[in-house]
Image (cartoon, rainbow, N blue to C red; front, side, top):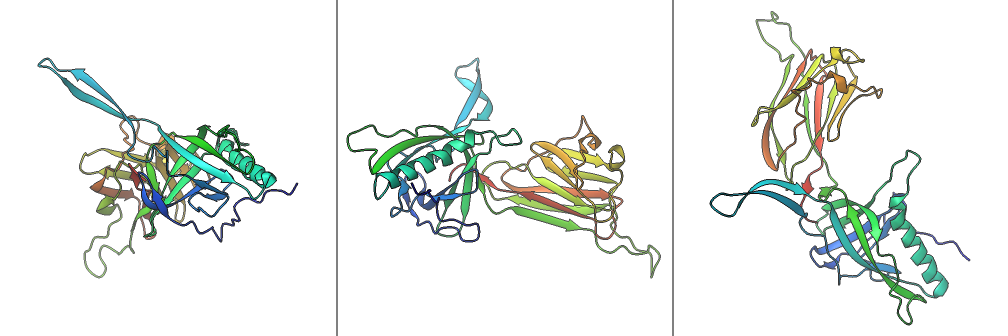
Length: 324
C-alpha cells in the first residue's frame, strides 16, 4: 500500500486555497493546520477532501454566560459576563479515486484532527488551528481541539470511495485572533550633558506617554519586551490609573544591562529574562495589575528608571475578534 502524502505542503510554498461562500462567514478560504504544522485546505472543491457549507455552525460571536441579580422592582440586573468555550461544527466530505485512496485520505484526516488530544514530550497537548483568509489578504485564526464526529454516515455505498464526517471542534479561547501583530516601539535617544553646551534635560526615565489602538473587538493582553539598560520598569494605563512595576534589584538577575532584555507576559502572568530566569518576584505585588487593552484607543505611559541610549520598550499584541 502506498504511503499517504499529506497536503502537498511545505512552509515555503503553502497551497493556494480558493475562497468560497461559507455560511456565517462569507467569502473566505478555510485551512485547517494540524499540530504537526501540516496545512489542510478545506475549501478546495476539486480536492479529495473539503468542508461542506451545509451544517456549519459556531463561527459567529462567542457564547456567553450571564450572571444577574433580582431587582426589587422586578426583572434583574446584569452583574457579570463570562465568555465560554466555543464549539464549531464542521461537516467534511472525503473521497478518493478508489477505495484504498479514499481509505488513506480518511485515516490521514482523522489523525490530523485527533492528534490535538495527544500529549507531547512536554506533557502538553498542542491544538490545531482553523484559519479563515479573506480575499483582501486579512487572516483570522482560532485554536481547536477535536471533540467528536469523525464517523462515517453508515449508509449504503458510503465508505467505499467517499464518506462524510460531521466534526465537532472545541475552542478553549472563543475569540478569533489576527495573524498580524500590533507593535508599539519606544526608545531612549542619545543622552546629553546637562551643562553642555547650555543647561538642558534629556529623558533618562520616561520613554513617553502614548496612545495605543486596539483595532479588535475584545480586550487583548499584551506582551512587553524591555531592552536595557534599566533599573526599574513601570507601565501605567492612564485612563484607569492601574499599573505594574518591575524592580530589577528585587530579582535574581539584578539591573538590566545594555542589550539585555526582559519579557513580561500579561496572560498568563510571566516575567522572563533573555536567559530564561524567572523574574516574576520582582513585580510590585500585591498592587501590581497586569492590565489589558480594551478595543479602541487607550492612553498609556512607559517609564524606565536608569534608562540610557538604547533602552527601549516594545509592546506587542494580536487583535482578537468575536467572529471569523
